[in-house]
Length: 158
Image (cartoon, rainbow, N blue to C red; front, side):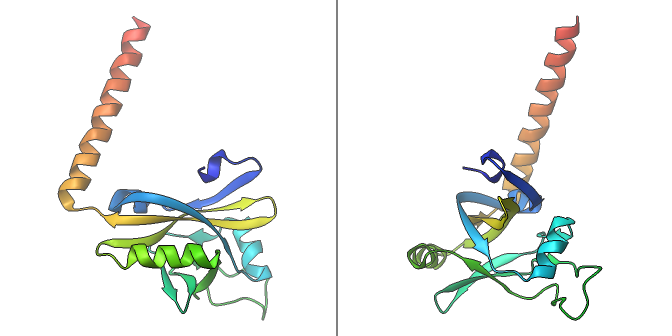
């Protein structure tokens, strides 16, 4: 299930660039280990997933490049905005992902960040990189869909 389909979830941020640059083959849900001031900053929506990715090291999975801005009312408890954040998944899921990304062309990309109840969750995607011609093809298909929609709306009015 996608993050926005779940009951009681509130999307904090989405990585739209990931869908432009990658083919998303599979999606997984993971928890994320955060500090209090980081959660408060997330509630304010101060996060950027644009250039983030995940890597597996020592049987643990980490999100790299996820920028959570320092909490404005925070003091000495604010953490480095670009620190590696540990993702929380079952060991067997991590081992499965490690086997999948060891193949050429696959990587793990955070797709969205959302609240599920009071917990912060990350939706990560197992992705393959798109070539330039794939991006052009996707853009052309999207434009054609927009044109069809526009034409059908104008035709309904007549």
